[in-house]
Image (cartoon, rainbow, N blue to C red; front, side, top):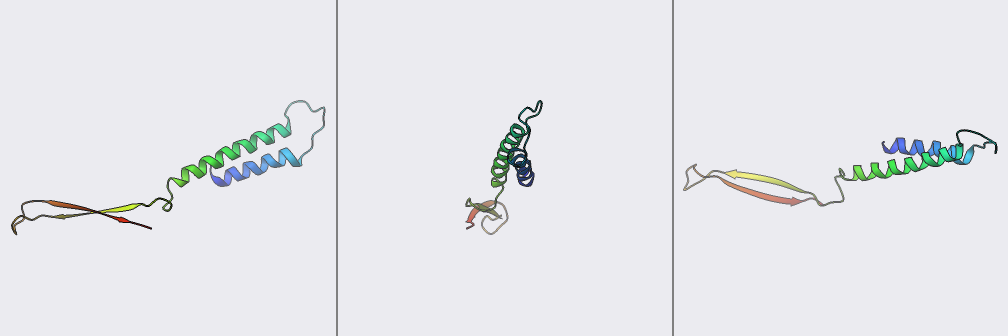
Length: 91
């Protein structure tokens, strides 16, 4: 459930809970309870969506880029391998 769908389900739940009236002797489906359930589901869906997408955010955590440079040298001849790793901290 995405953020937009969560907001839509929450709005429908709020309409069922607060804007509609039902007779006191209504049998079957209770509109107010259904609206409350929809608002709860929307809140959980919104929270999970925000937690899921925050793990993919390019900001907030100091991510570092790794670059490896391979130089093949040994006494001026290409025989050995040297691997260097550097980290650049992105702000």
